[in-house]
Length: 174
Length: 423
Image (cartoon, rainbow over all chains, first blue to last red; front, top):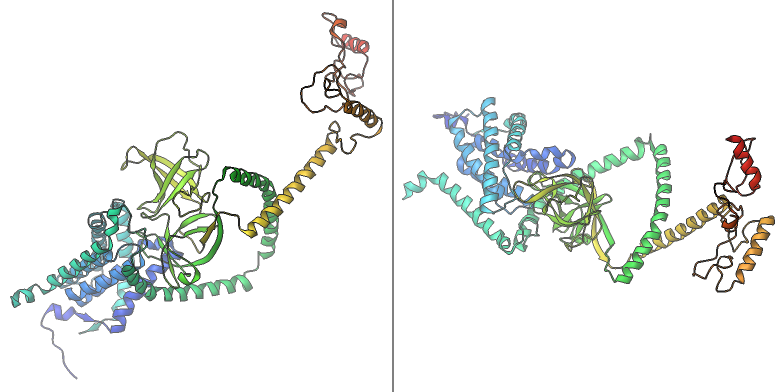
């Protein structure tokens, strides 16, 4: 039996996932996100694909992987909206990169850290989406709603904690 | 150089990916300069292809889940949940009867309206054909008010076709795929519809807001605009037919971002958050559809019957109104009336209504009264016989026994005596 030795924290906390989990978990999040608001309109406040982006990015701790995962998930989300392709792609790509980079510095298995990460990234995404829509696309109808975005961030954090625990079960140590 | 790329590999990958998407955004939004909002318009062919792939990946799952839930619900409602069916059936029957009466009442107005429109050569739009579709999913974001329908190109749906429910306007089709279509709700920021306020007849444009509300924000303050007023489509946008209900005015407030305009918030007639089934208008025609024409004819017949029945009832309840065709009242009064009518039939042009000395004015004949009173022509004595200060001869007074007699039937002297006694 081969013995593993870990020489750094990066190696200690770096995880991998089965290809099926890598593909199906984000896809399931996107499908659920598209279906739940039909029955429960308030669920449109959530962003399950964002939670999946953050989870995979901090678990893999690879910025390139985080960027690509975030971009692909974001582009799929864009495909379901009436927005041009790239709005969510850019926002989630950047978040994937930052989440993977932060994963080196903090203990992402700690529940409090996870809550803070999700809360912060949700607010960051709101800011990025505002900048992209308002500045890049020149959409003057878009306005920043601070209270609404705070509520969104709290709701996403509440959902993210149990979701992270479920996804933890699919982690494989590299 | 190699060490530079190796060191900044992560950042460089991020920059390249973001830049590629920025370029893609720029390619997708060339039409904004032409005054068209890109998000509300159907995509170009290349973008449609990308979106079609995404939709093809997600909608089969949505369709499967929707079909399963629908099947389960139908089973439950058809076989298990029959507790209130009988009561509901009775209520629905009553409602149908009530609606038929209302339809009959409106049919005549509608027929008159159509005649006037024909006279004015007004081009009316009628919904000729609709396709019923079910909502299978959403965009998944509260920033994009888009729904997915289970019908597509193969079912005759096309971009920009209006979508309604029995309650009112919902939105229009944006992108149409082979078996699915994208419905852009009127609450989306990129959608718009020409509307008219029903009572004040003020025209405006309804738009969605970031918060998902529907509002008119191109009107200045006007005292005629009041909360509760109904908003209907004007037909001016070339998408929605004229006269469809949009909603009612919920609130009116100054719009701080677009002064001097007001933000008139509309409560949509259809519940946009809980849509399950919608109707896509696939054909609009200038003529009333054959089925509707048949309905209108039937309703008009019913309305005529109702009117006739109402007239008959009125004739029975009011004996002084006489039907000349049926001979009017019966008995001695009828004979008297017939005699008077016979006399009136031989009137000279100088006489009208059977009254000699009244010049011909073109007015219809006045039938003779059944119960003459003090207002009946000829019942009042001539002015030369009246004394100053004396009571009017046919003045009404209650009989001592408490039973009232018809006015003008009692002698003038006894009436005066009775008045003196009571005084």
